[in-house]
Length: 553
Image (cartoon, rainbow, N blue to C red; front, side):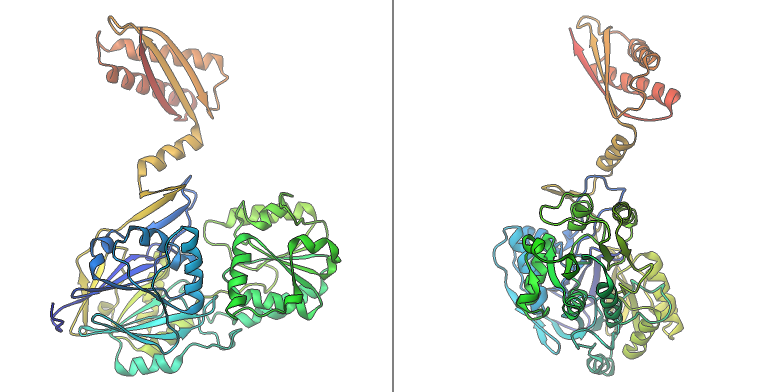
């Protein structure tokens, strides 16, 4: 198919516009498609039993013969976590482009899923690649993980600059600042559409530099009377570097625990992103040989995960480490929305032990990895795009970012706030809305991966809140009249109320006997369910799940 300027560049967000997570955007021109990021989102309280939430990537599978490459901006789960599931479903294997650190984290994740080695292509600041009709330039950005990249995509229809996740940190821990020269160079060439991170669009001012955390960590670690436990994201390599630097500076050894923490620190050390002498990092099983005041433990659990190292230590269930009265615990992260209660539960458990606890509420032990309002304005000013689309955020973040764009002089009709599955079309450097594509979410539930089924989640919530009542009806095979009824229940609060149970039995008999003789078994089951459910609601104002079973004798 000939590539002409009359063909549109289609921008197709499949995830990332309804919350912080499951980021995935397809760019399509003619017969060529490039996919940027493939992330997950963690479930909230309305998704009982669900382990992970993925974007619905059906559109990618339907056009997989057009897929020229998968680009991953950085190594966080909300940008990489869906890759194992996507790659299992793809028959056409496309190369994966990202930085050295991100590719190593992806490779490790795919090995856990027993996926064969992929076609990995390392890129870095200043790399230019061509994928079909796409000319793609990569440039460095600062975030809460090293080796984060932004993208500038050029096609015959026009150009797009995608910031990826970012903040404008002038004193990054590794010294790698945003590539302002590249951003301004692309702006000079012309940026038709800007896609920009909206996570902190509601936060005034500037996000503090990651370097601001170091002195606070060192002060706490230096003055702590016993062991120090620091919980952080295992992918936050810059934060881990500052913890290690503080520990070594005050003469403490570092212990690493938690599966992902051990794994990611090893990868970061192997690649040179995390620097600590071998003699200053020790095994968790050797910790008893060293005085408490000489120990710093880096662990997972900053989000209150029940199986994380911090939670298990707080509950006395960790196989090699324990937390005692007088120890210091630093939670060096912000709770992801939905995790606040879990984090508070861990803090309460630690408080009962008698720990000294520091978090972002009482010490400067965490700063965000995302740009606040003034940085977002600076990005808009540098890029000076003709059109703008906020990405990576909840509805309030996207709309607030759009308001900032209007303040920066972008016309209202040149700003697009999209939902997942909505599309934009660019022709001759002009952007308008295009036809929508199928979108939604996919649930990972144990070993199964399936489309979102509201009935399943509704039933799980009912079971969790009101329990289950099983009604076994014995009926005559001759005329289907009820001969006996038995009830059993699990999780139903009024199960021991004899008067209520007797009334429930009568309600079932009455409901079933009301229907005509020789009624079908399905009709008997429906009558029993409705009769029992209505009776229990009238008496208890609860709706347990009712399962009717009819036996013929």
